[in-house]
Length: 229
Length: 40
Image (cartoon, rainbow over all chains, first blue to last red; front, side, top):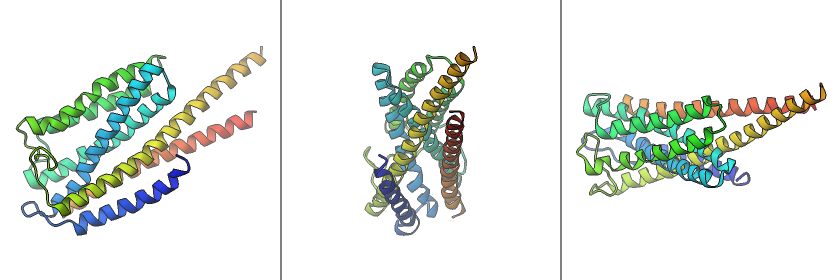
């Protein structure tokens, strides 16, 4: 990954720049909503990226529970943290779109409420990781991650199976989208996925290094105490 | 249009804030590694 990092960084910067240009200039203006619909090109890819990261967190948590591999635990932690960042973007951009279109910032609609619950679950996961000093913390966090991941399909399919105020899916579920809009959406999804991969890897690397430093510090203080006897 | 810009600016503000948090983490780690090297 170290060798691929600069290449991926350049690719990500190019994709993000083109994605922004395409979202603001290339994509056609939606007839009823006007320019505010362009929020969709950031809101939807951020949601898909958050779901992918929470899925990665689930897989890494299961691997940790089976093999007790600390690197899987570090990956689960990194994926959850970056997933929360993307989920925050979803929860911020959604109301900014809703205000001019619906006339309200927020409504306790099923899709919106389940997304907020998803965010709260993963924030509590991060708080558990940060404030619990128990040796069983990684195990408890992995179990919480498995339960938390159950909310992801609920969020995704809530607009398929229930009548909600949230717009219907544009891909699958009987929805349709202008091919030019789909192109811009997919470009931004690719851009945010690459960006998430870079940030998640950096967070994972930082977590692994932090643990190594903590272990070395503990060993050093133990050796210091031994030699002072 | 202002809502559109607000959404895009908010998105990048969140990402830049998180990148800043990561960079601070790396800087803290680097100083801890330097401390450990000095003690040896």
